Image (cartoon, rainbow, N blue to C red; front, top):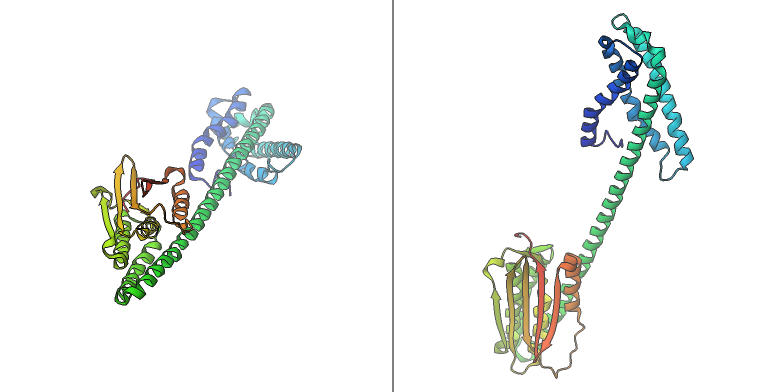
Amino acid sequence: MHPVLSHPHRRRLFIILWPLFGAGAGLLPFWWAGGQLGDAWAVALWGEALGLPVLAAAYVCRAAPITTSDPWRVLVTISLAALITAGLWLEAGRAWLWLVSPAAPSPYAVFPTMTMPAALGAALLFMLASAVNYTLTAGDERQAVAARMLQAEIGARDAELRALRAQVNPHFLFNCLHSISSLIGSSPAGARQMCIELADFFRESLRAGAQNRIALSSEVDLARRYLEIERLRFGSRLGINFQVADDVGDIPMPALLLQPLVENAVRHGIATLVDGGTVTLEVTRHTGRIAVRVENPFDPDEERHGTGIGLKNVRARLETTYGPLATLHAESNDARFTVLLSIPLEGPA
């Protein structure tokens, strides 16, 4: 594509500036040769015709790309093209000025005198146009490379996000099957009810997981619904304490990001305690950020059997989605496990 004509802004700038350069290419040698001012229109029109070979310089530059060609080849190619352009333009000018000589006699009369400066001016304009074309082409190539790199990065991030999100459902399913197996012996009716509730829950979670972002209120509802299902298994041993600020409901966040956190709170916290405990989910809004705190009690003497995939998945998704702008910090203190999540504030979902 032409580096000037294919870009609307560059094309507009050329249309504005070239009449000045073209007229100057004809008028300056004409005045130097002592032509009559009243006949200047003839040489001005002749100068405008130089715009065609100036635009054609782009194709000469393409034949000798500066990034892959030997410098001498570039110099010789541009110099020869400039000389040929100047010669053809002079011959076209000779014919044109002879044609209009009845109406404007002085340009044709002084043409031999103005030939040398006109040829020099035409050659310099062609070389200047070549330099501009090389510069524009290099800039376009850099932008194209940057766009390709950005597209590749976006594609890689999307693929990574899809892979990470694909881990959520198997991990969640494993935990749910573990919960159902625990109920089968002690409460078959509860196990059947849990299967029914899980079917509905899976339907909602799969719908949410198909989206890149969901409203924070929807994400919190999924976490609450999961804990209500687990309550079928734990009964009064599982307490639920949700503290969600009123002004965060429409804030978008990655789908199923809180799911592994509340799962871990139940499996590695409440399940380890004879008397159970309460899972606390607190969501607050600070300046430009959303803060999430998930806290649960646990038995420090209980041997942990988990693989850590839940927190690893959440941390990896945060890194892929927000880069260094999001943080995840987990700590245990006084038999309480706390996960602190901070993500940048985005617009409404």
